[in-house]
Amino acid sequence: MTRGKLEVHIVEGKDIKDTDVIGKGDPYVELWLDNDSSKHKTDTRSGTATPVWDKFFHYFVNDNKVLNLRVLDEDVGADEEIGVAKISLDQVYKNEYIDQWVSLPDAKVSGTCNGQVRVILEFWPTS
Image (tube, rainbow, N blue to C red; front, side, top):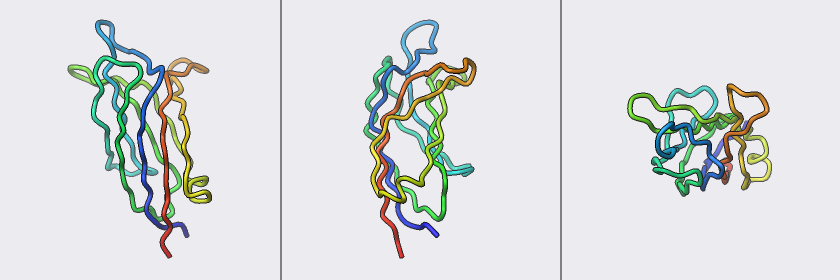
């Protein structure tokens, strides 16, 4: 059984797709564990394809398997999805620290990447 504290650091993004017809994108990140309905999000960074969020989130994990990450473009009305990624937690449980760039595959166009997000995961197991 894997239990402990998981720290998620959403550092920055690069090459984030601009989904706006007029102006530049306003990206933010939404994240949640497994199928949890409670989601956390970063602040929006206005008018950039290279946002720096530098935001920390803390979770108490109990055999959770996946960290879901979704990048959206904040718009008046409905926000647009830029990309979604699933990060397996197996490696962070094993190594207790991971610093990685996560690709955001385009849900509509196979083989297309809508940018990347740098995520640092740190895990402190409890007995």
